[in-house]
Length: 197
Image (cartoon, rainbow, N blue to C red; front, top):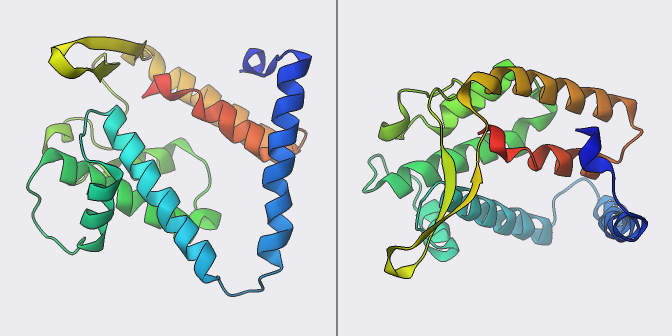
């Protein structure tokens, strides 16, 4: 993990500027007082929709952000017409839970398994590994018009996932607790480990 944080000077400075820019919003949000403003609620909704759309498209879903937004508005649906809807519903539930309760969800492998179980609870194709680490190899593939495919990256082999997840959770918890690295740097480093999925 530490090697991922070894950057040249110019890149380090660019990251520091961007992190500083994000940090400047902390004071502005705190200045809004205890109640959420309409702008913060709108930003949360946009971030949720874009996150769900991007994450499910990596898994092969085809719903656009507008389709995700429309689907979320009618989320009281009890049966789903497609696998895309199953996955979007799962992501929506997990993101909602995290946004509401993140302070009460410590970073542990058990909680990761529980969130994974919730994420896939409506996904019929994923019942075999719901709430567990993967047992089969997979790749993230981009599908292009005309049927052309390109492997974006190959993921971690199933037999290595448990060991690497333990290391990832330990590294993340330690670095967030120590406070030596900015939390955004820690989060970005963890996010770059998507090959564990």
